[in-house]
Image 1: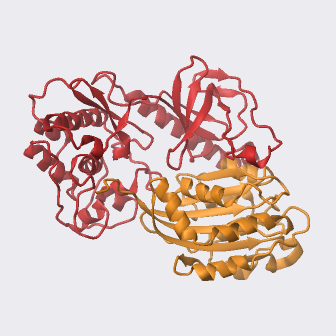
Image 2: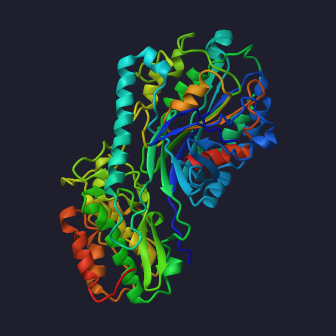
Image 3: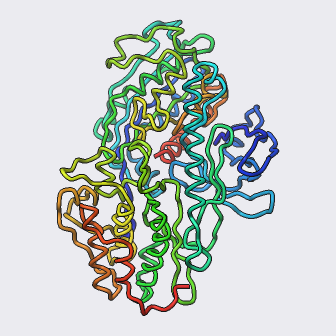
Length: 230
Length: 336
């Protein structure tokens, strides 16, 4: 009889992916990652003494609002895994790396969209955002948020300080669940990721090389980052 | 690759430290980036990263005297930057004051955690707490002989040694409770045993979620581990409701302790059972369900009865730590 009782977490996971031209390799990694994702996550968590109660996954992609307007941001619904794994796979298989022009991109608007996801709030919830980019981001306010993507009445942040406040500064939980929120940042040492990686609570920054497609973000590293953050 | 910040010269704890910039801005090749970085946090040279839950934990060496230490980097709170001051000075100053209060709180708790009661000390108290760059760090002594409370290890123990171990755990917790400090994260993993000729001595670790019994932190800040939440913690944090006023306090630790002891000493090695459905103990207690508490093999029915009563919904119905200790009996000999 096993005597080890492990905690089971309800994980809501949002991948925020920069899909500009240089990100082809990481998009391939994400395509690889989502094949049998719930089983892989479950087994990686189990190896770390953690359990997975259930898993919901959402994909948000972005390029540059300045170049492409509202089309630069796209968001899927949450997929409940493993039940909707095929539907998730279809979304991910449709991702292609293109456009974006030169840096910076619209990563902060995409991150805000992720923060406003319809998270589930239960005991042992974990709200994990995995951000994958190899580029800097425009300051907020450079371009308008696509209104139809933001369906709640919380006013979007006007600058990074306001966005940090929305992320939560203890004891103020901001717009997220203070105990559940996690940000795993695969991003270069560039504006604004350095500031976010160093100064935002509950954030794990794994540095990628600027302009080189977030090469450190392979399947194992992403999985391990998620499990460690839980 | 785990990027830890580029630590610079600064004041850490009691010591003025001068550290080298160890992270080059040029990122090394992919294979190399997977290697663990060796950097310094003030006088502490990081060696092995170890599992510490969501916190970043390292084994390290204090370069001042070569001693082995355990370092914990907190994921929150974070010190605001100078850029934030330029943008919103009032908000910046408020955040800095919150960060300073956080440090004072941890230092104050650490000062109160004394370890005189049993042998070398029943509480593994933090040695240092400090802000470094944007993050908060705590340093604990490295004790190699700590053994986690584990049912497999304890299965063969004689009743007397079981009682001695439980009494030792209670004595350790009493050190805190006598000072009106709530541990707030009592769980199996935070209770360790050290073998001594006469049995074992308990060591409590991880005082990061401690709070003064008369001043609990806000619900968003109150820490702990969900599996061990008492009914009052569940209600306080908004996960459940109760018609009763359930105050947080030292009795909240006893609820968690009863679960941990059951996991360690019961034949099943699990938390006590309420129904076939897996639900949290606190939720069952709130529902008024009757618990099945297995024998702990202590040969002390009163002790086991009182440990079971620690799972009562209303804190007033739970025994206090002195009542639990008295149920251990007096004819046990020295613990250490």
